[in-house]
Length: 96
Image 1: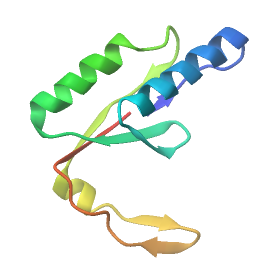
Image 2: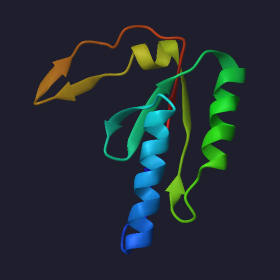
Image 3: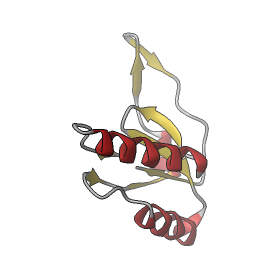
Image 4: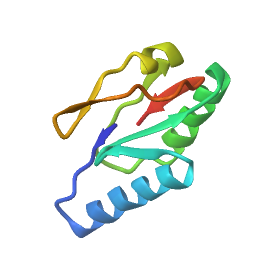
């Protein structure tokens, strides 16, 4: 998940480039500044972290969270005032 400045044209361009990078890397947009990608194991997670680190925009706040498949499976989600069914089980989730 991230909070990137978008006050100037240069900042907006950097934010757009970062979002496009995440999509190209197989991340899915969960919310405007929250992207998720399932990875397999610690090595896969570490690889993704390094790739994100190499593509960070020059300004802003980027945070990476790691969830196990069980933690993700137990997440409760509400959409349009209704409870949604749990997501199908995956190996691991990384949020950016």
